Length: 447
Ligand SMILES: [Zn+2]
Ligand SMILES: [Zn+2]
Image (cartoon, rainbow, N blue to C red; front, side, top):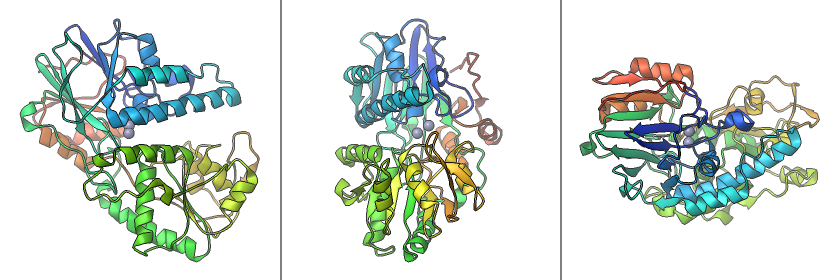
């Protein structure tokens, strides 16, 4: 029901017999208003359940909207995902409220704080590996299996009458600083259909860098800036990458590989950090997870004096948003840093070509950008702006390995741009039928 072969509003309607099950129900990250919602038109009455793989907004951001339309639908997620959804969805309401005022988007908000509260009250927060029935009279059983990626994230194993389906959602095979890599479903599960993500399908050479090799590059980059008495800004997604990177930086300071300077973290990243702390037993066994007070608050950076004081002495700042959307903490801090060549801005992951972050990394000295909505343009003097690849997604060779190891009868490639999905389709070889779903058509899967 999402936008098909792109990373849009992730949502898949699975129909088996007369039962309807929705896997994920996200908001499109680049579209606004109702256009960002999945298309719920294929639903025939209230589905039995919506099962949420993890708390990124492109996977859960439309759940309050769906449950408002479908009051009889049950909602399931892991307990950690549910706690994270609570934070992320309330934040979405706040962001939609701001956008509706600033840019006059009349559809916003698509739902309100009360709708989020009702989702959290209604939803079932479950453990990994515990099989559950969708309903008292449903024959379908589901199980959450750890998928790496972010806290609470899960692949969903669906055992329907006569057909077993595994939806990987977003997966990381490699260990990160805090989270271990994905687990595979039991070999005895006999998976008929595998629905697999394709995010990095178009990325050549993705296997050449990994989490630890990127940490080594980051050490060199941070030292260069701090030695020149500059400030390091790392724009980062609030859920997942922020918590991972804060602990990387803290470790590097403890190991005396970078100077002992103050490390700052921005608001939503801190709130998510507290939920990581609450579920620390889900992190990999050898993970060292520092208490939140290790990292200072950035303060009210919308006050010019506050952010000027913030960048006066050398420090490392991890702030949202990751792609530096205008009027977010990373953008308003960056508008101070770009005036001075001593500093460094290091992007931690994927940058969409339409975003301010992408334009900054590719700009020439003297180009000017507005960092706040309707704000005055600031001339860019700083040149030390770099990209790092701390991906929480498996690279494409690993994705092929996942398919080969699970050996399903059908493979459905989702969650990637057209070229990424096409690469996966063309390079995935085995005794199975391959599918690229069309959002406007049903896909019939034989067991
Ligand atoms: Zn995700
Ligand atoms: Zn995703």
